[in-house]
Image (cartoon, rainbow, N blue to C red; front, side, top):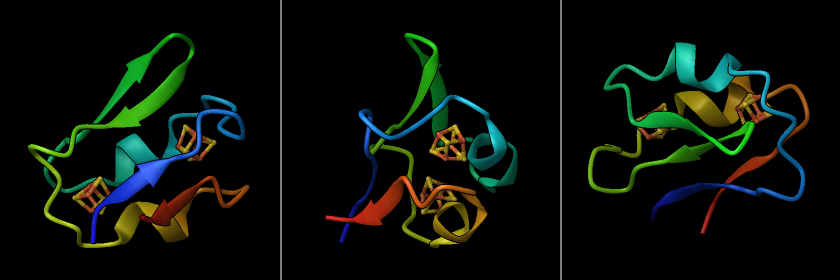
Length: 57
Ligand code: SF4
Ligand code: SF4
């Protein structure tokens, strides 16, 4: 299961990026996106997001 950021919800705070152990979360267009080629699906980002913009798809 891959983790994804809902771009219509993300406010670009960057908290998730700072908590990713493999630096899979990158800024794009004032928001953040998860690089699925790098993500190891650890789930750390999901609990970090203050507005629950990250979920498994
Ligand atoms: S699930 Fe883990 S590895 Fe994947 S983006 Fe989130 S924190 Fe990074
Ligand atoms: S923590 Fe949530 S709101 Fe902040 S950049 Fe990440 S996905 Fe967006």
